Length: 293
Image (cartoon, rainbow, N blue to C red; front, side, top):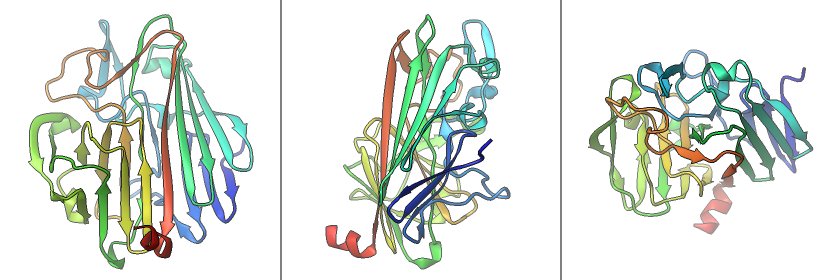
């Protein structure tokens, strides 16, 4: 069994694992784009979130009268995918329902993750197919941790459009409360420092923006996420990364007692239907980023 799969495009390289269909590394020239993971802080690198994003109340979901365990961000990152396409610059992984997935999710489905590498960009396409006889609710998300150097200089996160300078307070158990707290977002620009995340992640829900830029001292990372209404920024222990998470759904609200069909922001996919979601990550090194600013 091959543990990892390497894509090439010019001087760019990207490496993937069939376990969780996770990107393990992405390099543009000599620039390492992703955090390498650290078991003592955060062992993941760029996990795929499915069929839920965020925390489920009590660690389970309810479908009809039955409760199913649901890990934070779902079970896709814990699951082995099949490699269903591989070429020099494209790899496609597919997860189909099985005895293991039905412990968490009693639906028949197929989840395919297609990664396409370009010289300065990485494209991710997520396709969900409902193979069940009933409507299937789901959420999907991408959770890459981008490498950065806090000591190298200022970092800013820039939104495409104006957004309210506030985010929900995260309640006990990772649940979304109805209360908000202010964030220092001014004129679409958020100064990114480790102190921003001392309390919790910043969850921008139902954003007007679908494009974002992380301005680093050595260049600009642009994230185009047209199919994802929610953005989450997260760091842990001031480690050298910023997680830029694109979500279609959210975690359970505080006090939520409904079924998974009633969970806010879930997509309800009809029997036999499929749906695709895309994100494009593009890197411009300092010289080019300044020229295009």
